[in-house]
Every structure is written in structure tokens, then in C-alpha cells.
Image (cartoon, rainbow, N blue to C red):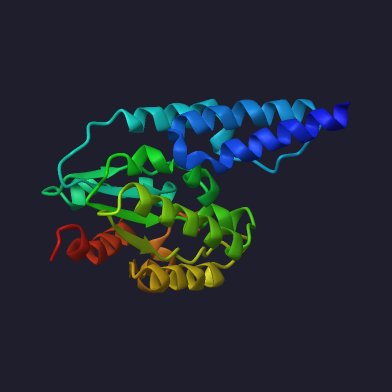
Length: 236
């Protein structure tokens, strides 16, 4: 009997996750958190982890979803590397919104994709994969999730210009390499005819462009990144 219940609940979880395109991102996250808890009570490891099953994470997404939609909006989406990009400072004359969330993985992003595609932004600047690398997720797995994210953006908001960004090298010795992930990002960009901002090449492994943890970016790094983004963001 316990086995039958586990199978049934597992099927419900899978269906809820895969049906994300038809539900609001916040709703999916709440259901995912509830169903994951049910599976854990039954002794099943879902493999779903990270901030997406945390109440504070859901609250952050709800707050972002409540932001006023701007005309010709340019959205910046990603993890803590993107949260540090002060879009109002670097692009004061653009209707820019930073909708990045600290600690987010590609999988987490997939579950909230409708919270920003529903805004139908003019442009969407995307940098994801840092936390995937830090948690030793395979580049192929990350690329598959990013592929799904891109397809869902194009389905819901086909006029949105998507711009991918390569992941900067993580100069902390124990953090792992992003080389294969960046190759996969390049492959996706070529497949979907999407522009890529090569932040990885621009920053290299210069320690002055990192904070002490070797992962997060210094103000000088953000200045270089903003310079790369300027012709894309302001439409030159």
C-alpha cells in the first residue's frame, strides 16, 4: 500500500512540474513545495532541493511578480551574479528591471519562468549556471533546462529578444569549471539564433574582478559587464 501511494504521489509531482507552462510560476512553486514535502514524509528523495522549496524564495518571487510592468521593459534574470548588477546605475535611461534571485539554479528558474514571460519584455538578459556548477550539476543537465526555459519564453512571449551570457570562471579552487557549460550555452545560442554576451572571456580569471570568495563579482567586473551590455540594452 505504501508503495502504491508513493508511486501515485510521485506521478502527481512529475505532472505538476512538467505542466509548469500552463500554471503561474508562483503557483507551481507552492505546489512543488507541498508535494515535495509529502514525498519526503513518505521517505522518497525527490532530488528537488535549493531555494525553490523555501518559503522566503516563494515570497521573493511573489514580490517580483507584483512589480509594475514597464513599456519596452528590459529584464535581467539570473542568480546572485545578476542581483549585483545595478541596472538603474548602468542603464538610467532604460526601462530596466533586475529580476534575479540569489542562489537560483537553472531548475529553479524553470519553475518561475511564467512570472517574467507574462510581462512580455522587449528584451531579456539571462545569466544562469553559476549555482549549477557549484552544486556539481552536469553541464548537459543545465543545458537541457535552459533549452526548456528558452522554448517557454518564445512560446509565451515570442517578440522578446533573448540574450544569453556565458558564466564567468569561478576562480575559487574548489568551485569547479564552467568551460563545458559555456560550450553548451554557445550551442543553444547558435541553435536558437540568440546573441551571447561573452562575460567569461571578458573577465578571465583576474582576481581583481572577483570578491574574496572567488565567485561573486567586484564593482570593476560589473563595469566591464555593463560596457558589454550597453549596445544591446540601449538598442544600438
